[in-house]
Length: 433
Ligand code: ATP
Image (cartoon, rainbow, N blue to C red):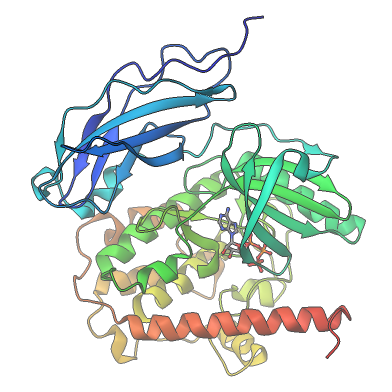
């Protein structure tokens, strides 16, 4: 067997992709020789023309393209890229031509045309009965959910940055649930869906090693100061959400927990999203009965509450609620408490009467109307949504959507999440109040 060594550099220098006044996307070819083990990522370096030093922009990009942001308008920049495998990094590639940051090359709205970045190649993951810390360094906490915490982590061998989701398993049933999540994630290999990298059983925890998504929750992004939210941006997000959901449904999997917290942006300042959290997902066979009794009241479909047959349409209801909130900051079924919310969902009574909908296009309203339908058989599915005029034609309004109400929505959801966590802990007797 050939000895392993670092790979050769990319076969050619990086080239200019999309350019704006403050960003440059570079693309480069792969290596001609991988050194005997697969290339796990690339290091991208940049130099301002006239400077002598190289600045490392990233040590952790898997795809063969990268967007350098925060650049100065009309300055010229040079780029070079190295390939990395488990034995180390290659020499840098040849240096690119100087590329000027200028608006002439394109505009910000073109992000949709960029190829999706894949964090790593599809992997066949088997749960390893060993301590995750042997292979990964566990770093700071990224988030917390009902089932456990998620930390940033670094694979010791490759230095790849990933996320570790720690889930406490107290019983065989808990363990089966997590194994269900793992087996479902193995099927869901798609750029809009969070990818699984590794899995461990350590003591009373199962640990999923996941693709690291650094851009935070979608709704946090849309309320940021530097973000302008109009229907056009909402369309961009909904196209991606429905693309991810369509793929899941083609694979006969229902997500069953579609809500804003489970849609993350891939990078800070990026509008590309990933759907996360397959903890409640289920394999679905239309010929067999499938009923569940879980979900988040504000986003859950009436058939779940009524304990009726669920289907792909169940996720589409939640997509309709997410869209309604994104366009208005209002939650269509929210009551003063869970019981009232649940009651509002079962009657499926909602409207566009609030003034926040005054400037919303008819196409957007029609999109939502075809999702928030009581009878699941009458609801649009993901493939219908993707053909809907609002997503397909350039009919979205450019009217600015108020962020104030979305901020209030977010604050309330955070408060609710914290409250629910305390409630859960109290139930388990772990909190001494
Ligand atoms: P829930 O209570 O929503 O069911 P959960 O226990 O199943 O949550 P997740 O939703 O998977 O956990 O993760 C909790 C939080 O951790 C997410 O809302 C997100 O902020 C963060 N997070 C999860 N996965 C990642 C990731 N791969 N990269 C970055 N942050 C992540």
